[in-house]
Image (cartoon, rainbow, N blue to C red; front, top):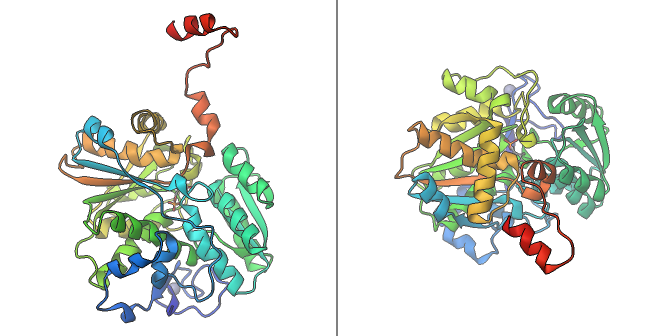
Length: 403
Ligand SMILES: *Cc1c(COP(=O)(O)O)cnc(C)c1O
Ligand SMILES: [Zn+2]
């Protein structure tokens, strides 16, 4: 596949494969895919390949055999009961917990790690609130690369930590939050200690584009009115925008769905700037939320995300931890779909925007639920009632469950 790496801000072409920002303006990087050979084709033509990231290989900046764990191809659930509860015409949930390591990060990581191998790198690394490290550790194992992950101290969900350790990464918790960890890993990348696979690496969002492609594919290319993303570092919602623009450019789709971003109240720098119509943002110093995957004060792709939202007529909103947990449990108990707190922010955001009249009842909405409930079992247990206790007799169990 032909492509060029460019600065998203000033358009400068980037030749050095190891930069994570523009050398002239420090802008973030992006990849221009050369798609002219697809003119005159249709997305239906891709259906001979199995659903998943590599069905969309034409849109991936990779020329070699992918390092793949068969990521993507996740269910798109039609949540009729939840839609009725909220009074919404249609509510689909894209369940990214069904990915190999249990989050959408695998979509970007199959591309990112394949890129690392193409470049001949031996050590890969990232800063992570948890899921990026779990994913990178697995793909590094598959590729036979060494892996270093930097986590903020004390705030990583146990399932994610277990995965990173299990897959053999060197796991380091740094004394600080995610934003601090990202700063340090960038330094290590600049000094050549590792190849950085955070989402500022422009190859990651390219893989994440497949999430949006798949949603449209699974809806038989009938456009939903809105796609709702939880937003942390903000690469995922940007990737959706990039994906949709590429298909629009090919004439594969006409209109774009309203891309809608939801942040947690305690870490919502982009919601603040959206409210003022600004295209840049002021970082939040000490981000705080139970939804640790979006506990990010200085979103690396924040400006890109704002562009995605403005350009598609979407909105950004913030939800409280209480609203997040309520939505997480409602989805689980009404639909049997288990997602981690950050993922439930998208559901909570739909409820909030409906209550405010910003989402109409006639809309067809897709919520992206980014990670699996088992990523963060402690939060779940802390918010459930007690486990019942009984002696080992049917009689006593009957007594306990009926009380
Ligand atoms: C990474 C992550 C997010 C946030 O995605 P961004 O691209 O950083 O906005 C949301 N939910 C989960 C479960 C994640 O792992
Ligand atoms: Zn630049």
